[in-house]
Amino acid sequence: MDTDILNIENDTSHLDLLVFEIDNRMFGINVAKVKEVINYQPLTIVPKTHPSIEGIFMPREDMITVIDLKHALRLGNSEPKGNFILTNFNSLNMAFHVDSIKGIHSASWQDIMKPNGATGPLEEGLTTGIIKHKDSLIIVLDFEKIVTDINPDTGLKVHEMDELAGRGRIDIPILVVEDSVLLNRLIVESLGKAGYKNLTHTANGQEAWDLIEEWRDAGTLDEHVRCVITDIEMPIMDGHKLTKLIKEGRGTNRLKVVIFSSMINDATRKKGEELGADVQMTKPEIGLLVGELDKLLGVA
Image 1 (tube, rainbow, N blue to C red):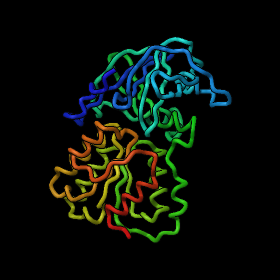
Image 2: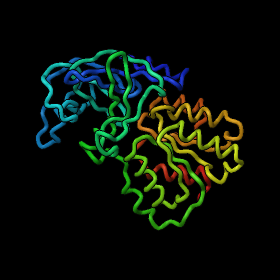
Image 3: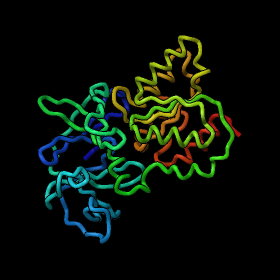
Image 4: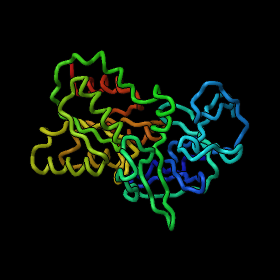
């Protein structure tokens, strides 16, 4: 499968979702995370692994771990058929076993509705958004959380902050933009441990841009933000669009922008450079993020 279909070179307002089916339900994953789709292949079972890990295989030279997505979503166990979605994010190559592939659905970030928490605590949910398509709802899954729940070592490495806990207070104002409730909290807490206490955080690019415009128009921009740390994949407004607005905006282009995302690859890195991002980093290296912040903001 050719992931160039994302057309990331020319657009920051739309995304393409690979839509797939599990147990007669429709789900989606950002095409930017997908390397290819292949038919089911026999797997080698690894003893004493997480029950959602179905096995491993080597489609080429790399060994790939396969997650039974149906089991991870608590919908039962997959049959030995269907498709594997091979992905790359958080610097990991993984495959997800699904029932069938339905195709590509192009949507605007503004079309993605955020879960409201009625089905349970947002920090514990596996859904990042919902899109209505004809008479169906497509659930956009939080693949990072799915993988982290299976192997916590792949998540945000907050333990790296322990050695920085004694640093003095740093009052440089930073705006954190992250739609995952859990990651938003962990990033804020981790930066706080490293001394960055003057933090504002929002759930998507639109909320962040509204604040930036408000502060700029009030003449208080420098008091509220000097650096923006943003994810890429977010509902309503994504991080690339936010970066574009900041770097092209009247009175905002002096702000530093750090893209901190699981989706940093050759294509997204090139796009970030074109939009003027000052630093681009792959989750989950929160310790490296603090080091880059220190250099970017001139913290000794």
